[in-house]
Amino acid sequence: MHEVALCNSLVEMIREQQRQRGFQRVRRVIVEVGVLGHVDPHALDFAFDVEAKDSPAEGAELEIREIEGRAWCMDCSKLETIARRGDACPECGGFTLIVEQGDELRLKELEVI
Ligand SMILES: [Zn+2]
Image 1 (cartoon, rainbow, N blue to C red):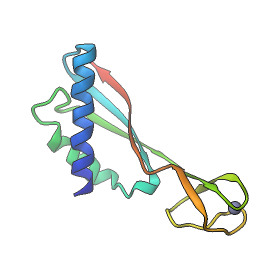
Image 2 (cartoon, rainbow, N blue to C red; image 1 turned 90 degrees about the vertical axis):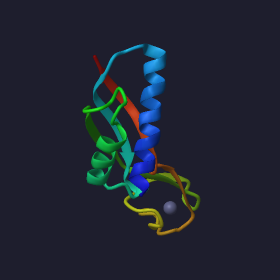
Image 3 (spheres, rainbow, N blue to C red; image 1 turned 45 degrees about the horizontal axis):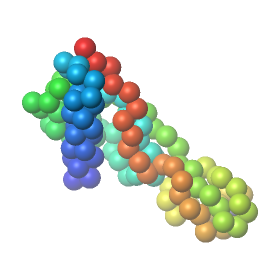
Image 4 (tube, protein in one colour; image 1 turned 180 degrees about the horizontal axis):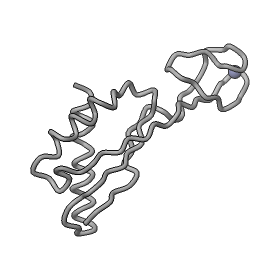
């Protein structure tokens, strides 16, 4: 499952942060998830609980913030907002779009103890 792999690397990022900053535990994890990445927030939440076991993030609250999809249209040279990968440019109807944002999962903030 896609979400499990994402949470696995998320927990790895948290462990890395712990090595750098030396906190005890994580109370809250804020992540940004792009709407183009096909991530189900409920599945992500569930997978996080499982993956965070025996890590500094065990029992932490996962806050998911969705970020919109953005793509460059090569036809009209504009940065457009798109809802799905493969959508046409809302401006000119062209399909030569290069996705710039919206399929990533980013660790935004850690609330630590
Ligand atoms: Zn366009």
